[in-house]
Image (tube, rainbow, N blue to C red; front, side, top):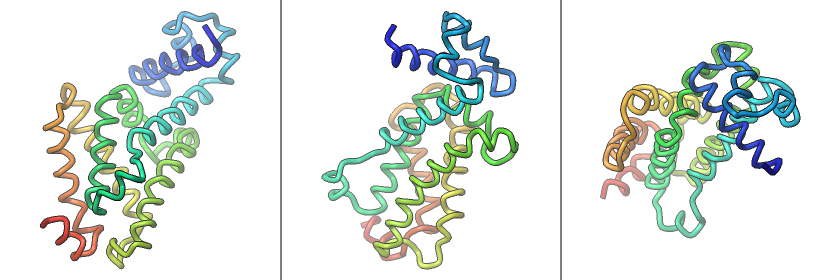
Length: 206
């Protein structure tokens, strides 16, 4: 097995272990057993459990970015709220399709345990940066409310998506397209009035 393929295989197995056991109850030996590799092999790619966990989160962040990305040509055809809806829907699809990652994020949590926060700090920072970029762009384009707090809105968006994952994704079998659309629309109704200017909302409703 080539080096990069082996590394990805180890990360896939680590995802399974962390999803089943959580960070604290998972051990490198568990990953070795699931991956069917020698003990020395895993240390050719990862220094320790923390490095393995962080590498998994970084890979997942890149996969999320690809999932929610949209071409410049497609952006031109969307109004601001439809663009926002697209990003939310694609995020729900991503979490729905990757139940193991969703379980890891929910079991780990954001900002509660100092040790875990240290591990996922870079992941969370990158996630926030990506969302803040969209919000700041919206502010510059004058489509968001003048009184919007971008940092707080980012936190609420992340928290809202995670709670959807907890209540409406992990507790049920895989969602179908209609169920994903319904979840997306409910999410949109909560956030549209708090984020966008009234004239932008009026254009979207027409």
